[in-house]
Length: 165
Image (tube, rainbow, N blue to C red; front, side, top):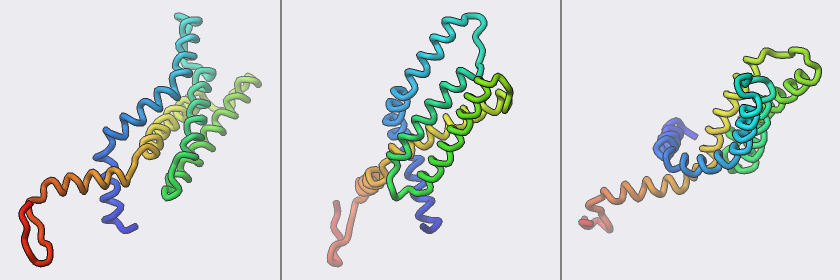
């Protein structure tokens, strides 16, 4: 893919983010509603003693892992780079989750809480980005862009004759 075509594809994607975000937001809410409820239950039980600990971060990590796993199967085959990045992100989430479980069970610090927290936030942001990419329909977006350009066309030439539209 040459630079001009890549730029046009990126521009079309960015211009279609609002429409894609509407599709993605419903899916994200459905995916993350159970973890949100779990964290709210923990908050209700702990009350004033509530803090963002490894157990809560694990809820986010495992949800990110499940969401990213679903994206691996939804990404079109023609988006190999995105699929590869999805798999790398999934591996990172699974490794963080595995180490966090070991850390909780052994009650021995492996990584600092900040690493788990940063990993959870980063993989959540990547989940949103990958979710947008998976719901983005390039063919539909390009068709709409052509239709919009066609609406602005006032004249065309057919067989050497100029025809007003």
